Image (tube, rainbow, N blue to C red; front, side, top):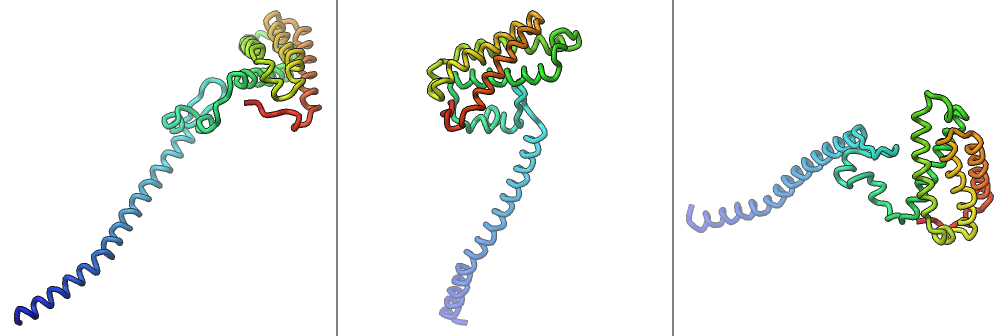
Length: 204
């Protein structure tokens, strides 16, 4: 075989190599990508399981997954929510405490005041009511007025008064004060329910 023939064969072989290389490279890359996706899938499942079974709590009844805690510093829902104003936080604290107290009274009646077995619950409720009452009083009336023109007066006359009476009633074990608090609370709730949803602008 002369030099020309060998050179021609070499060029043919080289073209074949160059033609096949992208296909081989693509196949190899596809295999690597599949392996990476599989690894990511396994990690995702493990993180999901860990987040579901290992929970973190702030002590207020709210809890979230350990992965959320490490990545977002708390619940992902809280992380994605827009920042709430201090007035709104006070509003939420007061509302939550009032609801919990109403359930407590409905469940135990006057026993919550006098039954030694419920002493711990009574003290805890009184402490929460004190905090909620202070928080509710610190809400700017203009903040409430921006939602509904009548809300500041109704909130002050009935809701805040209910928190105050409940707090005093739990501390002094006075069922009359607790009963008066229930009346105030109910008046506020009934007024809220009598309004249309469109009558209130969202609080932030």
